[in-house]
Amino acid sequence: MPDVRTPDVEAVFRESYGRAVAVLTRLLGDIDAAEEAVQDAFLTALQRWPVDGVPPSPAGWIVTTARNRAIDRLRRESTRTDRYRAAALLADPGPPPEEGAVRDDRLRMLFTCCHPALAPAARVALTLRLVGGLSTAEIAHAFLVPEATMAQRLVRAKNKIRDARIPYRVPAEADLPDRLSGVLAVVYLVYSEGHTASAGEGLVRTDLCAEAVRLARQLAELMPDEPEVLGLLALVLLSESRRAARVAPDGSLVPLPEQDRSRWDAALIAEGQELVRRCLRRGAPGPYQVQAAIQAVHSDAASAEETDWAQVLALYDHLMALAPSPVVALNRAVAVAEVHGPAMALALLDGLDLPRSHLLPAVRADLLRRLGRTAEAATAYDTALGLAGNATERAFLERRRAEVADAG
Amino acid sequence: MPQYLLSLIQPDGPMPAPEVLDPIMRDVAAVTERMRAAGAWVFSAGLHPAETATVVRPAGEDVLVTDGPYVEAKEHVGGFTIVEAEDLDAALAWGREVARATTLPVEVRPIANGGV
Image (tube, rainbow over all chains, first blue to last red; front, side, top):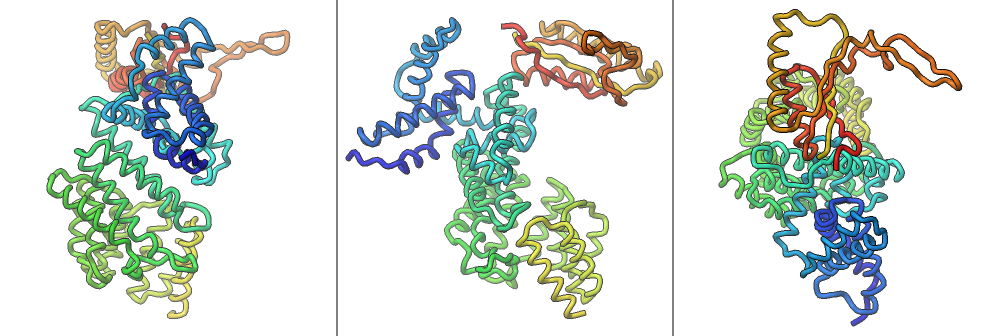
């Protein structure tokens, strides 16, 4: 039935932009040309689908049409090298590439976008654009920067890929662990930014969270044998399962112990916990798997009081051995407070160096509050308030500060 | 084949003592030898200290001459190598070897129109 509305094309766009650009980049050897061709194909879809109906394989149709558009363009702009490239493309007509080949192209694109020679902010922007299919405006909005700034960031990154010849390939086995952790870091960065926006009004930016979950799912589909990939997916699913419970109706932050656990998403928890079990069976633990396991322990507890803190602490010990960092040490101290009491946890904070983060003074304030040292707690809350950028987190800290002020 | 400029970023000041410098020079020579053997080496050179540099710059009809390097800093390019490499990963691999041998940071930069 020839009833195609723009949303149909939009849905296909989000689903297949990344894969189409990945295939075309391999065929054309150039990301810009690939994007142009794929955008041409979607414009054609907007004209044709309402008349002809949606083709049986929309994604394949887009790739084929984009390839034909690219050939047309190369013929029109007929420099000799372009004619050779057009001829080479024509020599490879055939049906749209099969799923295995597309999978390889998508992996190539992912590793190119997350290449260590690109700045982290550029990796994130490129990945959201070229793998996630977000528009420049959407990415700019998500990171609260002007669209022109984001456009420039993307152009600069793509120019570097082209001019410095960042290769379009999956790294060799020897480099894979390093390069893969770079890819995982990009996805996790997208999730963290969505989970607790570093600036702005709302605590959570749902669009970025959803995008990170989608990227993590794509990764798990592309690299199902990498335990850390599954670990990352489990971690974001388990964190995501609590999103609704993390924010009260008035928009304020609800800390984990006070969350209404009936509002946790049971399906996401089940999926995340199953992934954690699959990871455990592989016996190749890594930082994301252990963090996911910690979240799984929290998800297991029907109430905050039933949390198996000894298990959480053991997992943090493991995490400190695998990937020590001041943030991990801080979270471990929180678990120590539950197992061995706030006094012992407080002693652990003294050696920690986390400048410019509100987390350390916020945890210190909470431990002091629980020890009844209200005046010191109030001072620590003030320090934390001076550092917190997110309005919702600030409101939470202010509420706590008022409580200790009343008590003191 | 694309070419890349590998610039050594060297702190200003006196040369290190021979007992420090000699093993470094041996390591650098070994890297250069590996580059030649791989067919990647194009050219390399060490530079006299930055204070020996002279800048000439256009100023209207004239050209101004000033003593010293273009950018006043604590580090300057102290030498460079040009390599042929298939892509950035290959160039970075040479950059890593040079950095290890020289114990200095290396800037890897693609040369425009570096071969076809």
